[in-house]
Amino acid sequence: MKKKAAIITALLMIILSTTYGCTATSGSNYNTLKATDFKAQIAKERSEKDSTHHYRLAVLYSHYNNTRPDFKAAISEFKKFLKSKPNKGKLVEEARYKLDLLIRIVGNKETIRKLKDLDMTIEKRRKDTL
Image 1 (cartoon, rainbow, N blue to C red):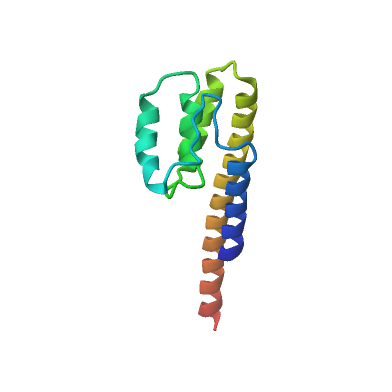
Image 2: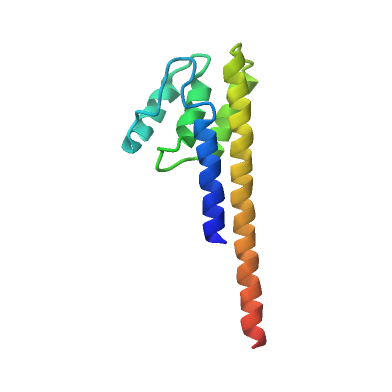
């Protein structure tokens, strides 16, 4: 079950990262960032206050090269971006799409956690009846 969950999560992350690419219309390209540079780049983007900084933060939080992705933070940033009613057609569509995928990833992780708990409970009961 762990292997299947890991595969599903990995596939969703790949789809999220590659479907539209990781380049915001502001010209920021995070594909060239090293895994160790994400924390510093996130701190830098937090100080930016232009119309797409929430979008860029969300991409950084959920980027496939980020060794410590924070999908919940990415969801929050995409929601802030969309709430700001940006006048960026393609970027808005990308944000909606990526937000939907992230919500599904987080939901799947919660489902996997519950299934693991259930599996442990069933295994314990099985051992108790022997």
